[in-house]
Image 1 (tube, helix red, strand yellow):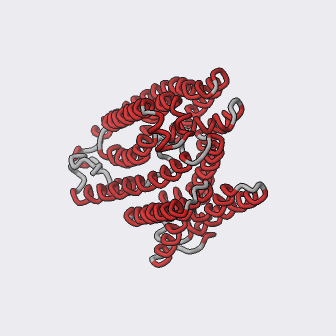
Image 2: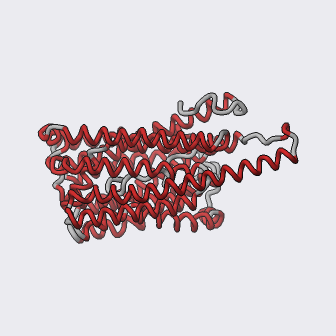
Amino acid sequence: MLVNPRLDRRLPEREQQGIGRQLGWSFIDQALSGLTNFLVTAILLRYSSPGQFGRLSLILLGYAFAVTMSRALVSTPIMISPEGVSTVPLRLAAGLGGLVAGPLIVSGLLFHWPVLFVMGVGAVPLLVQDSGRYVWFSVGRPAEATLLDAIWTLTQFGLLAALFAVGHRQTSWLLASWIGGAAASAIVAWQRIQRREDGRRDVRYYLSRHRAQIRTLLGEYLVVTVVAQATPYATLLVLNISEVGSLRAALTLLAPATLLLQAFIPQFLREGAVRANLSSRGSVERSLFRLHTALAGLIGLVGVVTWLLPGQLLHDAFGATAVRAQPLVLGAACALAILVLAMASISGMRVLGLPRLAMSSRIGLGLAELAGALVGADLFGTAGAYPGSAAGLLVGGLVITIRFLQMSDSKAHRGSTRSIRRRKQVAPRSAPVSSPAIVTANAAAPEGVHQPEMHSFGAE
């Protein structure tokens, strides 16, 4: 579906079709995953005050941080060096979930806050479910991962219907429906992986084999995640929790656009990896910028439409907190669109094999966003947070784009020089052909931490 059949005539048609099927399943999987996350966020927004939604959003950002650490420990290493179908990644994810669960459950009980308790109970199934998806992706079976997200989605819808039928609309119960869907999916993942287990079952062997990868990934992911998610926490220095909740609610209203970001960009990065193996760098760069420009335009369109919606309609759909956040939507859309445009260059760095440059650029972009948001919020309150963030992102994005184009031109020049030298030494018929195995591995990878991050005010 996403793979151009004319991408390269050296790639057999059967293998192109296989890549297309894997990309198609990956797209469906990511769409289902985004749908469950949006559903719980929208319902929490509907039945929460700005202060409640602000606290809930910060807790969900903490969950996203735990997922990042799980992917550094488990998911990404098995994508780099597949272990086969094994329960070892699930056991490690469960252990990490247990470490997260303890403090949350105790804090929930001590402070009489059911939401913390529910998130603590859900830490293990959430991380196990996520790791189960990656196990199937690592062995080239994305349909199994899609099945897990389908189970999560259907279970969550069923639990929500039951809660509304009996009149339970408290935030802790609504959040529990999301956790329940993850738990059902995690149980199925464990059973299916255990039944088909063909890999090593020794946790110590896994940790020993991947020690160097885990150490590197943990460091990189920790730095990038902290920087990318620092803004909503840092704005508490100049805004109160209700104001932060309104900022977060504004991005929730842009969900139709952010769902497409989550679904399309990871798929394009996989196809971009294929193109990078088979065609020119210029083709990859042009396609990246076209995609990101189109998505930025979509974000702007959704922002304008949402800003123009009648207040009563917005209140009926998303509640009073959404009405309070509506004036902030245009600024949020502007900041998110600029972020997407800037991420085109960072995505290009990743596709073209420049991960260190991509990481340093993402850190710089996050710091520019943070500085702009703090200055804007300090001067103008909630009305200035997103415009300030947009200004910081614009400056950082321009610097990153110029840097990427310079690096790309430099690499292209060196590559053409080496090609001329090889042609002088080697007969034309001996030119190497791209490896279909490499192409297939790139295409099979699921979305992960290296996907373009959502704006730090809105990533769930």
